[in-house]
Image 1: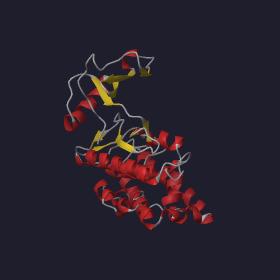
Image 2: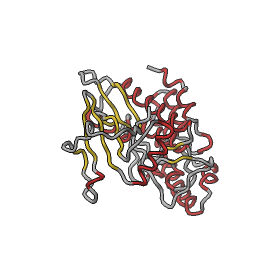
Image 3: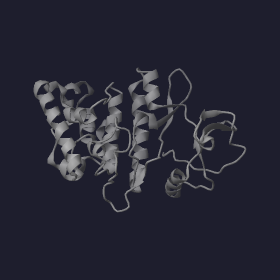
Length: 289
């Protein structure tokens, strides 16, 4: 389920008194929490460019009438959930990831890419009991989503999306495709093992998942971008030469071979060799307890 719900604006829903976030530069763009009956919603006034983007998404995923976005309200995010409860049981984390993968599949089926897949954009509802049973999870925040109308990779002036979760080609702002979303999703899965790329993100990626194939340079096809990739690849190769245990397949053995295979496929440095989200969803890992 994709959480770009764009619905009718009504005074019955919009509650100005419960402010989630103020936009001090333009108070009309602030975000509010609202209730209607027993359900909670998020009402978000937005700028025209973002609303126009949302309309394009809504035309394929739901209906809209007003320049006000109404979202179902969710209790938490995957990032907050893991921080608050590091011992959240494996099956519940996997359930969240499954819902997220299905949301990515829905987007990709209509040639949209999210570009900003990260743990705090995965919204989660719990049943409120002691077991913390996950009742629903969706992928949110489509501010920079893009439709690949011509089938070509997205090229932007600057890298977009969160630097911590971007694919290698995403770091160069060149050649971003559906495969880039898949890579980011693979990194999200690493979060549950306490592994978060921090500084020198490309170096970490290349250290974990290298060596860097020529196919990545061909996909980027940009002199400055390839120079950045080569520099970081050199650093990563030197690191691994002295510390071979830095490779993902070395330190991830405790995950088991099936989980290793799933993550390795999603995070292969060759964008053309990454599985589609449909292939991810049929990987045997989902059947493991």
